Image 1: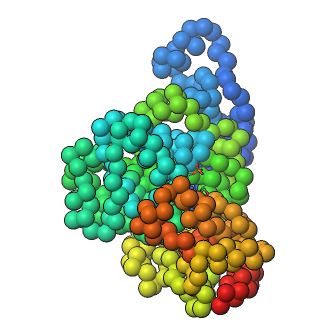
Image 2: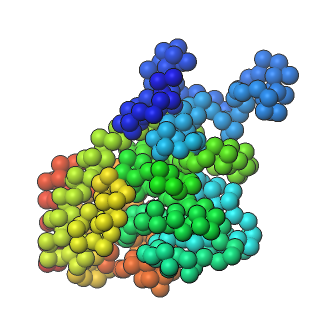
Length: 396
Ligand code: LCS
């Protein structure tokens, strides 16, 4: 079947996981906005529940619109199977609860999204699941932090919001020697820039709220990995904890995905131009952008990413209050968390996305009070720069 063939990603985002001939020729996947599915007989219901017959039962267990999205994301990431959730955090928590039990340990990149940090704390406090943070700069450093009960390595790359990169092939090499799973939160890259499964990672998670949706109108999460693991996830934490996506949100993501490659090209080209301009601006203290040739992560970026991405962080020569004055001065650029939307967004991680991380840990992670994070949108770069420049000039 056409949509199962291994087409290029630009084609898979449009056709993958969907055959219009199976749906009355409907060009776009139909929205099955139904909570439940009827059985023709009691015996058919029994067979479906027993797994002896394929078919839908109830939308928490599966839904045809959601299924099309799950098949599409698996094809795009080069994975065997995919599963959709009601938020990125529902996806992260479902994966961690499926793979870890009380007494286990996980090793995490030194820097993660604030709510993932909160979840690790919750798992430690309530379920005795320990974690440590690692720079993951060298094999030796990772090896040093692995315990006999370490079950998985959890990595964000680029890291939210410091934009630090982790060399995924290096992490995979260490993990495989110890029989440890590698989980990657690929949200900042999107599957268009980086495909961790193809580099040997076991599970990939997305906050689909960001680049995959791309239009600021959906909260959702996606997971891909091996078929056995995805089936287990579907029948355990997804079914029984229940953080499912609605069919309509899945439908919006199928629509958003079609333009992912062309949106990413524009996000990335805009970001590269803005990053260069920021670097030379006297208000900027330090630029955090993997596309900067002076970045220590530049070679990792070249090795594992198609482009450096659409996010830029920077510290200013000034205080937290100066950072707040700058963003209050912006007109076109919106003050908002989230990222990957058409609109350019700016936020102050220390008081917003990472405010739940204690101040001393924030400092260790490099989330300083004078750090700002920009999600570069799809507007004309000249207009983005004009707005940014006038605000930065406030405290020159
Ligand atoms: N993983 C990463 C890397 C994230 O940045 C986020 C959300 C999540 C997971 C959770 O996804 P959600 O449940 O929100 O779909 N990051 C946000 C951010 O940086 N600003 O607002 C949300």
